[in-house]
Image (cartoon, rainbow, N blue to C red; front, side, top):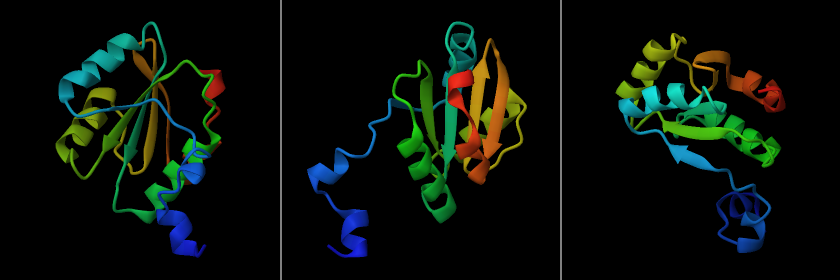
Length: 128
């Protein structure tokens, strides 16, 4: 199997090796307020991703491979290309400078950690 075949393969045995993450789509501004409120009882995570950016795609892939499914974190995925205004609203509401890719962790109503680019994969989620 060639390099591109491995990347774009629909082979189910290869797909089963990839962790299935419990992503929830972040598609509306009202969800941001709900995420902040929910963070008072459970850690919330937002992953802002640009589907056209190779770096973002690489960081997302590394994040998904390293993710521990035993963590009790609600995970939201924001497609920046489809929801540019929402991305700005997230930055404004959470008072976090917009970057892409970006990981934002919210706990007890406040952002406790945010990271972008390669720094995302150095974040130890078990501490939250």
